[in-house]
Image (cartoon, rainbow over all chains, first blue to last red):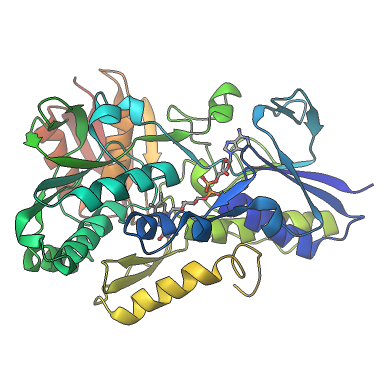
Length: 378
Length: 80
Ligand SMILES: Cc1cc2nc3c(=O)[nH]c(=O)nc-3n(C[C@H](O)[C@H](O)[C@H](O)COP(=O)(O)OP(=O)(O)OC[C@H]3O[C@@H](n4cnc5c(N)ncnc54)[C@H](O)[C@@H]3O)c2cc1C
């Protein structure tokens, strides 16, 4: 009888793992099941473009069933408990599913309630509904001060808040109201950009475009009445419109199954991607506790490694891959973009912003559904 | 030489570039209880400058920076 492979989570990590496994394994060798609570697949890099009207929800949200290989079963339900002793995943509706191999790909959960005043006082763009609300608010905004900050670490796509600051600058210039709007970016770090070697390039853009910034500003609370944001470091800054990246935690099922650290992130070996202490349980994508950027790119490369290793084990092959920490990211400033590539052994190299990289990103946004998500070509 | 303190939580951020060791420390400090001691392993030389700077700005305590082969262990106590 074939092995039961269960994948919890149908975002990029779970979907790419499932589709890669389906290509490597015959039906008799394994049954592959994805459990996803929404049945929808969101391409989150598109959220920035949604906020500025360059993409529509239909461009960035698809039915998970349409992306999954036919050999993969999809269960649309919430996994409520993972019992690693009995090797069982429990679903909300009561079913219990046994696994031989488990891949945890439950991503991150947004927790705006963790910052006092954030829900009432700030916008964000980290899911479709909130990005659309921000889009409306920005369309109506014609003068005043827009403040952009980070409500908690870790958060997905570390360059995203600096990206939205540049995007805003570019869009406001095109609307010819840039002179009426102040943009003020609050960085949690002692520099604007997370990667030190790239920071001078981003700083040059901020200085040239007159985007103000304050460093070492880790948001502690928001006062929606006074329209002020306070930092852990003790500073207070006023705003007219506040964009705050909400704090993230691991999925609730991780907490409820006592599988996570304090933030609900799954302790994971940085090379094998096995959950620490287990031989047949893996974690990939944003769900892990790995100190690398929570990105679709990492999720993609990790999914490939895990799919290869599970398939090899089932087929009795010895060839096991290791994840080398690879991340590729294109940071778009609205008219040009920076291309970055790095792994555990190779720090990111400094590059100039170019329009061609933006074109590459826009093309990738479309190709994603037909290539990466389906585990084709890349 | 003074003995290295026992840490309540150790974070291995060696050879990672984004978001980087300081962001990992900020996360651990946010999650820690007052009095807990956190160790961060970092191979990024900038951490030895950035982490003490942030720690003093936020009123936490830098217990020490311990040089190892190719990396440093930076130990911090949450004070408030
Ligand atoms: C604004 C923005 C811009 C970004 N830009 C980029 C970029 O340019 N490049 C890049 O590489 N990355 C980018 N990212 C990050 C990237 O989108 C994420 O890192 C990626 O989605 C992670 O994939 P994942 O599969 O691990 O998690 P997710 O995409 O979060 O998927 C997890 C899935 O698991 C499901 N799930 C969770 N818990 C359960 C449960 N208990 N039972 C069943 N299902 C469950 C969820 O419903 C979800 O479908 C961006 C993110 C944002 C928000």
